[in-house]
Length: 142
Image 1 (cartoon, rainbow, N blue to C red):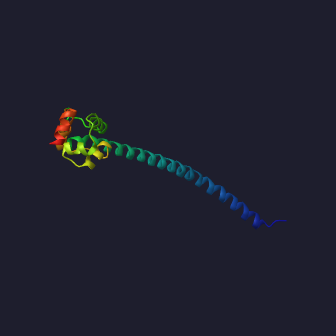
Image 2: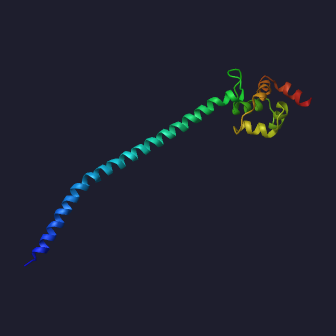
Image 3: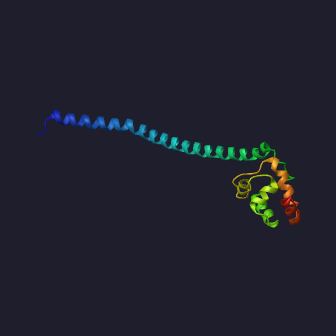
């Protein structure tokens, strides 16, 4: 026959576990809910930071032409356009550089889109557009 003390002890432990479980269950649910809220907020912060970064880059790109002093509308530079113009005139990159008054490397970088010409060089590039093959050859020989 079991001892009454051990039965009483087991019953007290069972009731205590039941009470503790009743007290901790709402805390566990609240904790899980808070964790999911924190995860959602972290995702939202990441999305907002990405948006801010994108908008910052767009603002920098829009502000760049104003800072370099490029004339708006009157002259647009494109790397492929410069290369096509040079080939139309039958010039090598070094000959085009001599006509423009810049280094061979500058023309190479402009045509590959690695850099852009300065605003002070736009006038020479615009003049290159209006040249004929004969005029370009005459200027190179001079």
